[in-house]
Image 1 (tube, rainbow, N blue to C red):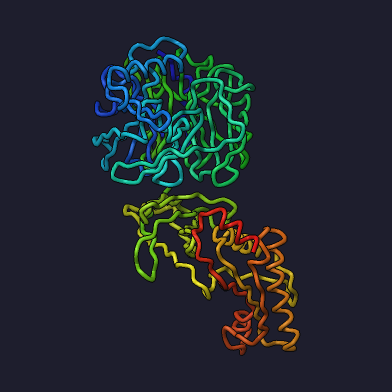
Image 2 (spheres, rainbow, N blue to C red):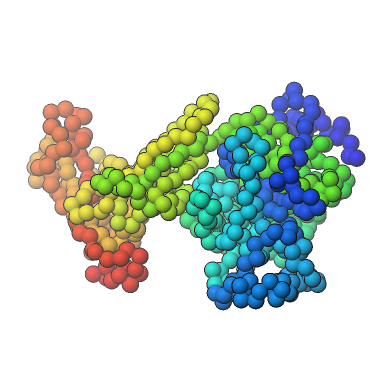
Length: 562
């Protein structure tokens, strides 16, 4: 057995805020037999943000999903049970470069299972079929900021085939899942067969375990950053402080984006893999403290790996071979501190009060350069909103206008019930005024202030999404000054916005008209400075809507050329 006592005090201190200094003993719990089968391996535990759902992978189990599509044909149905078994065995043989006679017992037979419970016992076990599972390796790597999304290993084509990488799947409810959508990672390259990743709670950072040309060992940890809605930067090696000449695998990044758990077979591990952790120093991602091995009984004299910490319950989940086969365990290393509030609701058209299928953009109010995307296929949504910050959500769909909502839930409160809200989508019509934040100008000029560029950028994004519309930008002033000068100022301000949209954001000038009204159309009386400020405004009106299918690229190009 490994002796933990020399590291006990340092690791207790090091784990803060994950453990209490007064906590001297850890009770490791092996999860129930519905999760841990007899004689088979259970690996990669991943908990939902609220801690009520546990995703795990069962390996080499006789009850597996026998679905394999090639060139659009389901081979299991085409070949029959005996022929399909031989066919799949040949595929596994090629994948592992060693003879496989019984595919059901192969390490490539990996299915995702789901354990759910409201009281922490995880007694409701389900085994999803296609498209979440198939006859190829399937495993959940990470949750995402959207409560109905998971990251799974590998990329799949609906017509058949599998490639290395990762995909996003969405829970549609009632046991239904979307087909995995591939995640685009620049210059993704993995020479080994072992791969895993973790996504940060804000959806902006991934830490991956893979083997590459600059790896120090069999597997190293790499970091990648989100660059757009569906693309990620080239993975960068995280350096010698974290990576060793051995294997670093199964990373997990805590929900505060500060603590990294992972498993390693480095020399200080007495046998096989152990679980380590380190802390990020500063605001960058290049400085980390020296990784420390977790104490017993979390680590044992057998393989311990695949850590996943859930702050809502305070449990660290992990896989261990301490009882022979790989089983899933958990240990409470911190008080339960939910970092998220569950928000549910509908997306509705207020004129009909009917639900609208759409997507939701969400993120920090103060950093609109990045947004998470939640797809609400049935017009309902369920989001995990971080506490202690201004968080914006807005529904979006071509042909509709959404209105942003700002949510803020106190960090020091425990919210026992889900918050329910509705998001509105108003159908686009000619003459509709866009609800935009104010655009500010330098005093008595048509120079747009820099803090208003973000508003104009959002307007440009709106026009790109709704490329079947044209707009009219209207400038207005108060009544303080010469009427002709005020009219010219209002015209110049409207033109300044158009020039920015055309010159900087590359919007077609044919889609934008301008008009100045001076002081002729006041929003309020001009008898106080507060009222005059309301009259100094720019309004954006939808002047024309082309009745086309908004997802037809040919029509889009035609409109841009008009």
